[in-house]
Length: 169
Image 1 (cartoon, rainbow, N blue to C red):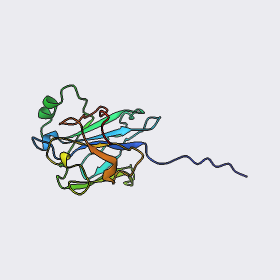
Image 2 (cartoon, rainbow, N blue to C red; image 1 turned 45 degrees about the horizontal axis):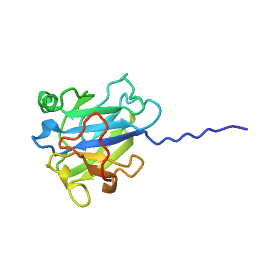
Image 3 (cartoon, rainbow, N blue to C red; image 1 turned 180 degrees about the vertical axis):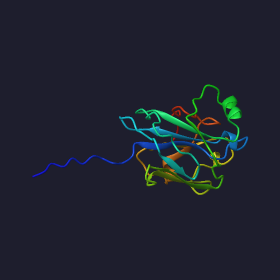
């Protein structure tokens, strides 16, 4: 006789905001992650597909509800000047595709934990394609590959590292 406890293994991390084609160029790109769960998440050793970034071993865990901001390493001083006081959690190499691409968070074993395939056409918000707005996730439990679960940021420049104001869905 045995007792098995099955826990929900779905990740509590989400891509919450993506600035892929900012006004001013690659220096202002960013990817924002949010822990939408109620416990902290250890991302030590995790990496990405689509950009070059690996979380260091023994990285501090991401607290429940917290945001983590990764920015392009093209010109960090310019990013900080545009977004004073924003806490940058890491610098990635490479650039986000202005035409859309697949971004994936990979665990320590290289397995996909989370991914999104954003695009610059079709039903994806056109304001996010060079007009200064970021993509903002509106339905954290929805399919991240569906443009119906994303909207353009209400403010030009987005809201990196902090909650996005609610707006029309």
